[in-house]
Amino acid sequence: MNTRKRREHFRGILEGDICVHPASVFDALSARAASELGFELTMLAGSIASMAVLGDPDICLISMTEFVDLANRICRAAETPLLVDADHGYGNALNVMRTVEELETAGVAALTIEDTELPRAFACEGAARLISREEGIGKMCAALEARQDPALAIIGRTSAVALSGLDDAILRLKAYERAGVDALFLTGVKQRAQVDAIAEAVSIPLILGAAAPELKDSAYLRERRVKISLQGHQPFLAAVQAMYGSLRALREGTPPSEITGLPSDDLMAGLTRRPAFEHWLTDFLSSPLPDRD
Image (cartoon, rainbow, N blue to C red; front, side):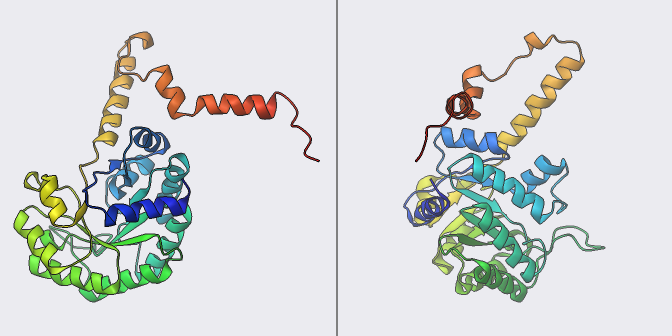
């Protein structure tokens, strides 16, 4: 599956009649595992990228180029479409344009741009703050202007429901829809009444991040045009726990042969494409290539 087909597949999800739960991935092998298991979509979150690349919390420390590099590695490794959380576009509207250009080149199928004020300003206490609605519109327009491949999906994201209230969230979402984004990503939504009001106010597909328990009903989500609903980032957390547990056991004297929970040789061979490489080694390193005259 090439980049264009991945993007067309993602648009098929937006146009479909089901709600998809993407696999949260964080590197090449996790992306390949998600593809092998049949996930329709993968997602790279900014918080996971920060921890995977830097070992730091999600406080806007990872650079755009570091994030793009990780996205590129994931796109290279697996054919499943990748949705990425591009945070605030790593700066102002012109930085957003650069971010879109780089992520498009990396091969992502879709990206989100949010209207949170990042990084956090000096003396900003309590909850995060939003940029103005006007600046948010400018960022969405800039992202759309920077896009070269019309199949790449640009998604407007806001946490206004939790930060400034439902009324402001609807004003922002309607403005981003008018700007031309392909879908709207909602965080901080906890109640069906909030989803109902948003679904009535806008007409393009919706995406939910970290949906509350009462928003887990697939039939309900389909009726509200929710095409994608995140389930969290358990794979990365499970990998951290497994890594820490095995290192601790070794440090405490457990023999390597007694470490449990390890992948089978067959699983590792499949995820690392070992049979294909063995075939290529034979074809390209063990004998001369045939004449091509």
